[in-house]
Image (cartoon, rainbow, N blue to C red; front, side, top):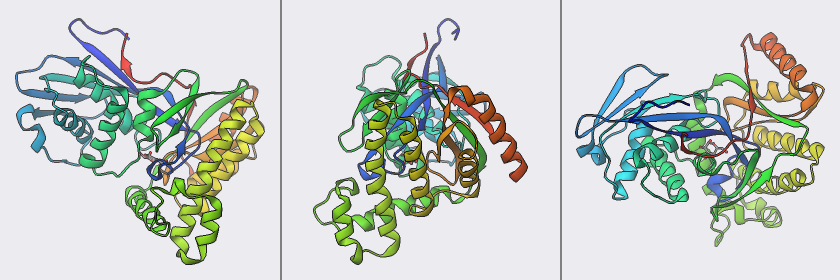
Length: 367
Ligand code: GLA
């Protein structure tokens, strides 16, 4: 990308989560890949004391007084993500320099591909503007911005993947230890996201509810810091005393953590069939035990599984709309894309967008 003189630019990617859904806030495992889609922010000078925010995709300019940044209140506006990050950076003792941030985002909002994390992480890089801060601290401060200012009690996966993504790899992230290893994607297969183009309202309230239901399930395991620390045997032995809903949520978490590790093994062995089966098991668990899927996502998964060359399909991200992720034999890619779009259109009269996911590097300056 060409950058005008006196302007610096930073890019942060969105992510597609391959497996390990809703496990991050339970200290579990996730396996996302950063995308080539993301958020780019150009930084140029501004009037003293001001932070000026502009977005190529959203109308209007937002002006913020840097002096009162710590007293800012959320407005339920896209700028909350930026201001939330600015507050966290200021709380760490960094001076927020006057700047104009021009934001250009290519991750579709509401797609479950982490447009928010891309905006947060790009903002952190832009506001730090070269001042050093550990990458893990950047991911954590962006997560705090979303939890404390935007008000969404999210886990660390999205911000971590945006910071630590690697070209041609997914990452296996341990959300308790906050460490990761790179996972190469086997040859001969493509990762394809299919966007339902719907985002049901329920999404954020249900997310909060799931966090609470997991906490309720955990309260039946004294001494266990997170649900990730509960084994399947322990869950089975305690099941009778846990109410039905928290039990189903816990079952999803415990088995989903196991599936992530199985998927990692299958990916290392290049076993596409097994990777695909784990995709489908994960989806069914999100559909029936965790109850975060929806009609459109289920239809896309069920349909994908009938199309030649599809090893597996599942919803990706928080759920209630957004995208499915599909593991597709490279030679069948075009057929698959045409078939799934046609079937979705026939059923819902909606044009699903198809996104070929190219695992990409994490955030940094734009060369
Ligand atoms: C959203 C949250 C993540 C994670 C996923 C579900 O993307 O931001 O932290 O919980 O949902 O896996």
